[in-house]
Length: 269
Picture 1: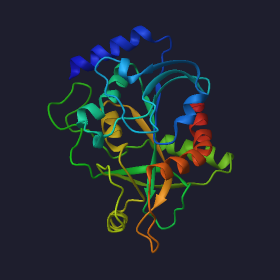
Picture 2 (picture 1 turned 180 degrees about the horizontal axis):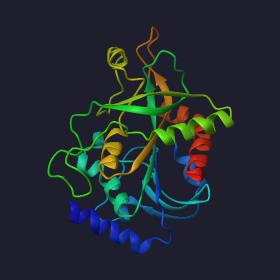
Picture 3 (picture 1 turned 30 degrees about the vertical axis):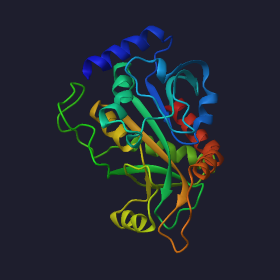
């Protein structure tokens, strides 16, 4: 695995004309932010050696090098999911490659279902912690020599970056919640009973991504910031029917507010 990571990183280094230390993963319905990246070099995942390919509608499946907020940046327009049939090593392969490319800070975004009864569709949630409810930890197996065998996850999401996001949100009169994100394997959306169970566990939002990426990023020593767009609600008196199209529409509508925070954070961090 490590040889493949190095091979992919070397292939990308030969293409790169920038030296990004910041990366961002754009989730469901959030690809519009990619259009703001200037002087961009766009490489489809299918052209990158050893790289898994995203198969989900709404995920373009491209790696982008360019500038956002005046900073060199690496962006993934679309991520890899466990439910697509990939194993956890493949799901988190891009994070390993990022580390070899010199990435020091990772911004992750996703669309999520709200389990907190105080949330509404279209709300933004700054992720303060996470729960791994996937069937496998991405660090299972031989330890890849990018980090410790038993990495600490006490601050999976960087407190300084969270405070920076809070400050930018206040400056721009953008309402944000703060909460815990729980990841399931998918691809089914959660039942009302599952939503209630996750809320009882302390989760404020639930989705099918992000957690494995952050685990591996922290293993590599990369600091992380995460934000969810609440695209549906569950476990309430009124059961909502959820479709992928509805999730994409809700995410796209809220995306400009999230983009404002992310763009300014990248500029200042």
